[in-house]
Figure 1: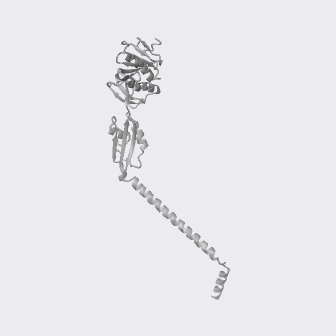
Figure 2: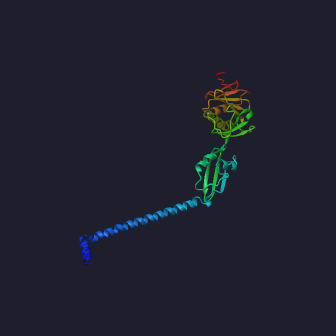
Figure 3: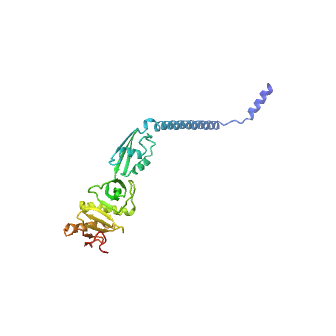
Length: 275
């Protein structure tokens, strides 16, 4: 026993003494590590709790879209709007619905110009539709008449012409609702948009010629030859001044293809300057 005691005392003597400040520093480092671990555990617990709350709220039946209000639609029915948006039978979550895609799908409907979606927590959305406006009807012969707006969108096919709506000839014969016309056709449609505001009900028909020139037929059996689709307002005002003068005879053509230089001729719907 005495030998063991002596050996233990020798070992203790060989061990260096730790300075109190160093011991205090070590203790502080251990406390800081424990504090960081505690903060990490708390932060992790908060994140997990937040994730659970998010999942419960987002995927809860409470936030399922069960009430859809469609308003502003005059031509497309509520059912057509909901079917286009894939919302007719589905019940998506209010927070997970792809609203941009829904708007895009609805705008593919022939009559829809734009739409807005308003979210009302917890389970309602309101879809507000802005409809397009027809500016003319394209005569497709036996296929009927295609209503068209100023942007070249075919809105609807009618079997009969609509009274007092400008008729447009030679702008297409196989058109379908939702189709968009080409760039040149937009120029012809711009004419159709301006004509009623200047000539009013006396203009009955717009004709697009094979050379892409444009004429307007009046109810008095007179014709206004516009030529290209440029300077339309000025050309129409010049033609209107001649029409209002009252000197036109039946079947005469007012050629205003060159602005400020109108010509009255007995020619049919052709460029009287070349005929």
